[in-house]
Length: 606
Image 1: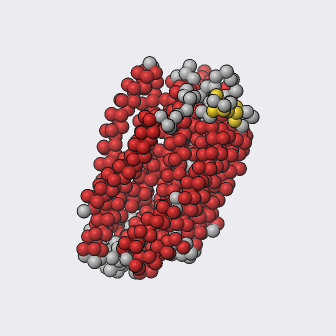
Image 2: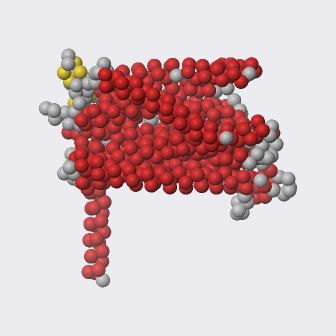
Image 3: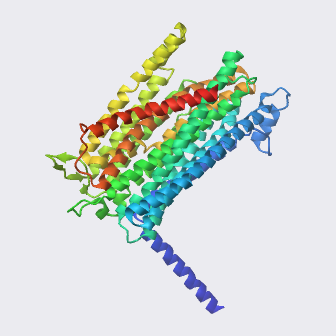
């Protein structure tokens, strides 16, 4: 017995030593990233439990079930119709995702094989090909998982938002929809950051002798995987969403003369499914792709070697290289803390509070994020570091020297720029402000005037965001070259969890209104859900503004990472006939793409 006890003690001591070594091996960046992501996942689960507490069927002996049983005494109670409508919307969402993800999975596996052979051939290393293809598949499946979770939670929350508005008023109705969007936001951001960190850590173990430059090149496949799924989610989901919406309006309002979401119109189920497909799964995949690409671009640029210098970020070590990932991880915690302002400190009590509370979320997360970014830059980055850049001075490559303060300013330009784009989008789309009210007045003059006025308003709304993006690009490029632009993109996406929460709030509220109409609740319930829906339409536009603004910065950062890895220092002469010709062709492609998608919507709706 003494010998056995001695052996057991030795085993315990060795296990304790191994655990301490693992903790010691974790850098400052690791100890910030992992806990933040785990907290984000736990918070998302807690939000889900709060939503689950609202019963749509009395399935246990809880107080909520007892209250619901009292409501179901009458045969005409609208609550009796809710489970059936809710079930049909969820079933439709699941069927759509099954079909879309089956096609997407097939494409991803095929494309992963292509990536493996191209990278292995180009680098003359089968290991690099395998790592890049593996990162691509992991990015794609992570994006699919996030889209699936977001869609399920959104459809799970819509009926509960309806019942919350019916039985408890604005406060619980708003909190339910807000928490439903929060589950998607925190789960997506936490999983995205955690999986990327795990991928980089595993790559270090698999190829310990490889340079950071090679490892981060391989990890760039993660961003490509996320963007591939975003293409399917945004285009496929967008076509379904708009086709279902237009089709429901044609058969209901135009042909049969029915109201919006009338229970006699069977197309309303497809319409409500479409809201989740486009603005939950599609938008989530889109922003996940932007986050993954901007992070990977920043990592690739940061790890690039600078000829004749030993003061690069790679020389500074793992903490300095992972600075972009730590920004995203810190954003999760900031968004969690700020969410309590909306649900506890200053909750919605009346209709007028809804837009104000959502606006406070945007402003507060962005403002608090700024000092956090400064502290992280000071702690993780060296006092000075050399960067590989493309800027020329007197015809020769400029010497790019970065610093924590310069990195902070670059990220700040993106963070504040995203906030301005969000506020401008709110101004042009909210019924509270003049532009939307003027457009509503123009509708009285007929359809033609409405279309003309609406298009003019849309074009006008682009002016300020373009100046904001141009300013962010100019300042960031002057300070830290292409690495600065990648940091600006990450700054804009630093509060992604909050952005996705607000974006998911829209379709959940829209679905809640549809369920209230189809279940034939009293008009007061529909008035409450319409108030949430009106704010939700604005928040959906804000989400699109973030997606487009970040995509502009991400595309430039990705192009910069590509150019830096190719060691292109001569620049591009736009006056070359070939360059100019293909520049014009490139300008045409978005219109071609838009024409195809619009025609697809028209066909499907008809």
